[in-house]
Length: 157
Image (cartoon, rainbow, N blue to C red; front, side, top):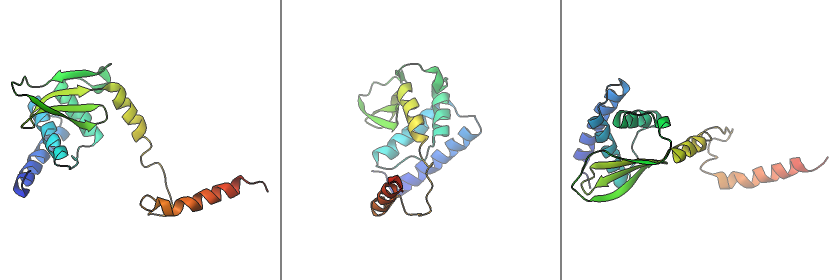
């Protein structure tokens, strides 16, 4: 488990790499390092702060291709490794990081169909608007009223 100082150091490195990503000058090695940092955060039960736009840019820098160029599921060897693969870490729907025991990125699997499914699913996020600000947290409280109101409006007359 990483110490607070380790996390700060990781965060600082992550921010520097993200800055280079924003400027469009991210190298393949830096892309791999960024994904390794993401794998470490996921293994600690934390969520990496890498949004979809940045993830696409990182994967393009790493693979040299746009995600739209992948037609079927593909596993790409990033670094030939003599070390045994420890596990697969799901980064996002359709993207698996295959890491060694020291959480070094060895392979990457991209499943374009699952990525397209993710895009369709994410299109629903945030489209609902409600006057009650706490509906997401207290939906069980509001649901019966919404159901009863819907039933009343369905009745004739």
